[in-house]
Amino acid sequence: MATRLLEYFGTLVAEDVGFPLTEAALSLAQDAYPDLDLQATLASIDELALRVNKRMPPDAAIAQKLQVLNRFFFGELGFAANLNDYNDPDNSHLNVVIQRRRGIPISLAVLYLEISSQIGVPARGVSFPGHFLLRVTTPAGEIMLDPTTGEALSESRLVDMLEPYVRQHSGESISSVLRALLMPATDREIIARMLRNLKSIYLQTERWQRLLGVQQRLVTLLPDRIEERRDRGFAFARLDFFRPAVEDLERYLEVRPDAEDATVVESQLEELRQRTRGEGAEGR
Image (cartoon, rainbow, N blue to C red):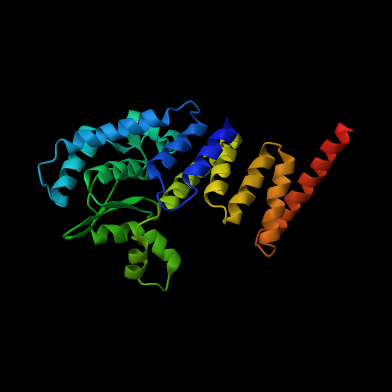
């Protein structure tokens, strides 16, 4: 089952052109809900888009469409941040977010982006530090929205949100840093951020099997990011899958022999090799 689900995910994220963001994001829930009916859930999102579209006045301008969408999404449907349990993995599972009307900024943004695309509101996601944002293009200019409330964020508010990050980038003007960080995220970057949110949660809660599932997806999504293969190796090791762990860590050191953590990885590798040899001796 896990292999089939990973293969399906691989087909979704194989190409950047025509990347099915909503379907790829929803498929992440299959690790926790393997019997999830993706097409039925996607149809339920389409139904929400149809409902809001019926409320649009004829020839509505972008600004008017945005107002109607925000009243529907945040007001009538009540989508909001899950402040009571922000680290619940289900905040990243779109099927549950739709049911509970609660999530985290990035999962709410993915739903908002899907609905907005179907009603002609040009919105993009923005991978802002600490809080994923929405960027809506209107004839009057760009509007930055908080995907948990629909609030339009002023430049001063964005600067306040950015301040902890800017401290780490002394020497750069805050305007240049802000401008760079407000660039739209690619669909692949959005899925990567969702997976890394889950990765952080499963590391903290030591749910190693779930962590391995996330790492498998990250390696599939970002095949050129060798550190994700390293981390998959560590996840394999946690579950006593010694041979694939050795393969991943050896590959990491082949690509990054001068990595800062090379000594640590090599030490882990030697231990895993010994245990692999031990497995072989037991089998004789």
